[in-house]
Image (cartoon, rainbow, N blue to C red; front, side, top):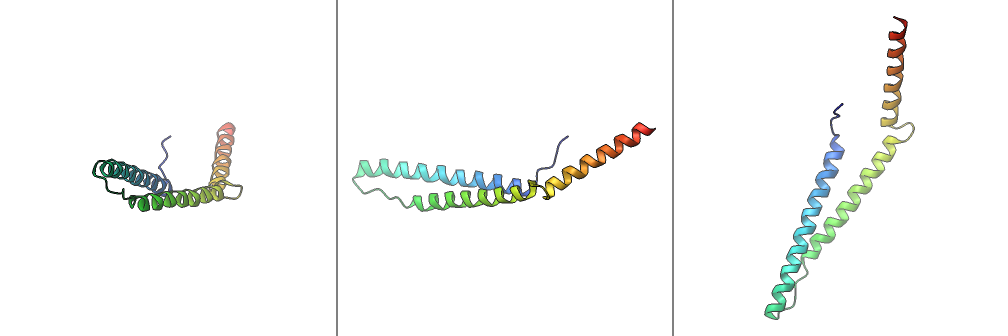
Amino acid sequence: MNKKQTTSKKLIVFLFINCVIIELFSMAMIALNVIFSKSTGYTPDFSPLNALIGAIVAEVVGFGIYAAKSALENREGGVTYLNAVYDLENQNNESEETDHD
């Protein structure tokens, strides 16, 4: 059975991919800057770290919110738990009806 991926999962995947791209770009820019500064004698510029710090904070906050949302949905009484119980009861009722036929 192929389930449709929820919007929140799509958003958290997009957030992680976007943050990883920012992290890789910042790392590459800092590495190039250090190489350039060694060859020219200028002091290196670490301003790309501002974007890196923001990306990491966004990643951590986004994951924290997603984890909290998932924990609330999957606990007893949560939406996912109630749907699973409902589906299980329906399967049991359907199997009992087919047994009586």
